[in-house]
Length: 263
Length: 68
Image (cartoon, rainbow over the protein chains, first blue to last red):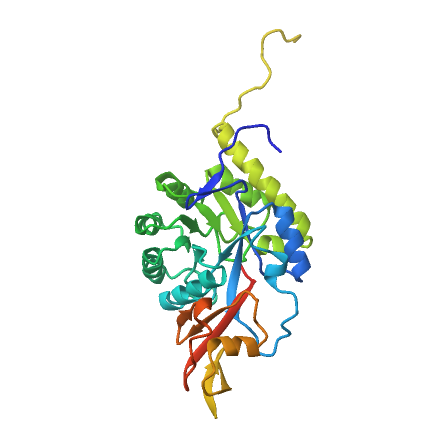
């Protein structure tokens, strides 16, 4: 890929080459889930924890058949939980499924319509989970004070939403994100709201350490192609960030010298 | 003798004295990546064969599915 030196994304002491993290939901089938995940180059893939359907065909292919832990770092999430106790319980089950694997994605929702995080419950859950030995990557609002509190609690990564989950609205408040990035000593990974490759690039240009997305890929007309686009977008944004962009100024500055013109 | 438990949110009858391990086997989930909790306490896989189920207990058997 690039011949430029690049540091890896380190989360809870483990290094990852890919700064794109993906969800595994909303695909049309398991095959597409796998193809898109592979095309994205993501190493970390989130999974939801749900009750087994009684009477389900036990021989039907399951998610781990197409996203085996040998190929991916699976990140159990607490999606669909509306209080700290449920989120903690769900993630304890997730840890058990993955044989004690400590990395998890905490989300505690506050509203069914907006899926905005309930920050007081999120803080409560984060504190308990960190004490219980989890490496917590936490979905949160883009409030820098809340982000700092989560970091102080010991979360392994701060994951502010860029806009509403699944909305595709993109990076609505780059200013808040910048404040969070500036203050954080742990990785800041935009989680929620990305719609297309340029959104991912913008997040990376702001200095985010990574981007987590699901709907932007799974909901695209061609998810595998969008996964590929996202991979390129993340790479473009990261390189642009490291290259150091020109400042914006409301003035022209010619690219060709004035001296030696024939006029 | 049959006893009533709650399994994944629904009423379920099992033979008295059954263990978590028996229940998992009866659902043909042996070898699958699942986790079990009884009354919201996770029962580690190593304990399944020992943990007997009692009437009224709430059992959750879960696995990973696609999600964001």
